[in-house]
Amino acid sequence: MLCPICNPEQPEILNYLKSVGLCKSEDEDTITMRQLFVEEIMKFDEELLAFFPNEDREAFVERAQEFRRQGTFDTAIGEPNAPVLQLVRDAKALVKALNRLKKRDDIVITRPDKGSGVVMDKAGYTRLLSAASIDDSSKLLRADEKRAKSHCRPPKHFHPLLKEEKDVNMILREVLLQNIADSLSPKGSRPAHLCGLLKTHKANLSMRPILSETGTYDYNLSKWLEEKLKPLSMNDFTITDAIRFSEEIRNSPIGEDDILVPYDVTALFTNFPLNGTINILVEKAFVDDWFNQTYDLNLQNDQLTKLLKIASHR
Image 1: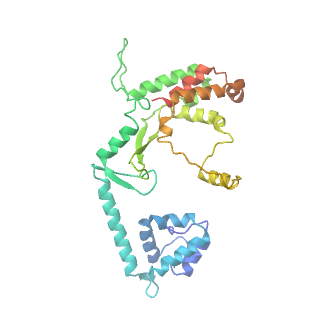
Image 2: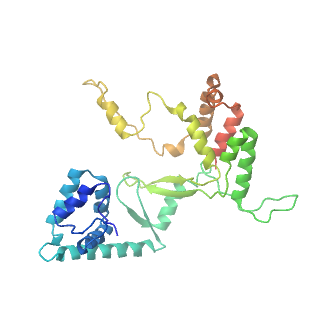
Image 3: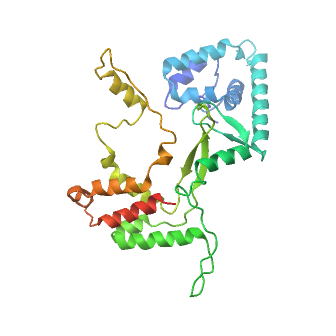
């Protein structure tokens, strides 16, 4: 059994643990009773568990020394002392309590948009999520689970996703080259998964809807379009993340009378005008026939518009 806190690519960590008495293994592939208790503690201490593989050498030494000063092991007899055993008992009790909460049907334990975890009534969670998503038919449409009427023999197996897959396949083969259509055709797709992140940092509690589309019938098409059209979104006024913003602002000349004004747009990403955005993308894509020239395609404006609507409309 490998030592749970030793990275095989970093033998100096194992040597350090031996030097401070946290590890007394004869070889690197065995663990002693002391390490078993370290492993037991680490199972329930996410902060400590996340620390070892990620931090640098100096931080590792500092944390390990702190861990030892707090009474990790009694070096005289080589067994865990009372503080360690109590830590393990408390951690196990906490995990049991969390597992009992997870099994309850009337509450939801979720991650917020910013901050720590949130426990709330499922009815309140559903109400906030609906208000931020499915209650607005311009954003999401409910799937019709009824079988459509047909003049011919109905299929033996029916599911709304099968119809969506068939429709997407047909359009892909009409618009794109066969090899591209084959690679983007959906097979065995699943419904999109909708969940919500609570905006606990806002004055009025609200929710950010998150739609996971991995494995959906239009997922491959969406990724393909995103890759092809991404160059159109890059410009001198786009900031990709907070780190890039901090670098830009430090290198920008700012006068004594200049003022930096932040704007907070309520529910920005869920309120984009979808059709207007598609029209802008298509217009930019066909300036000097950029899209076709870049990717050796032969699409018309209305065909790219159709693909974008498939990938973005529900």
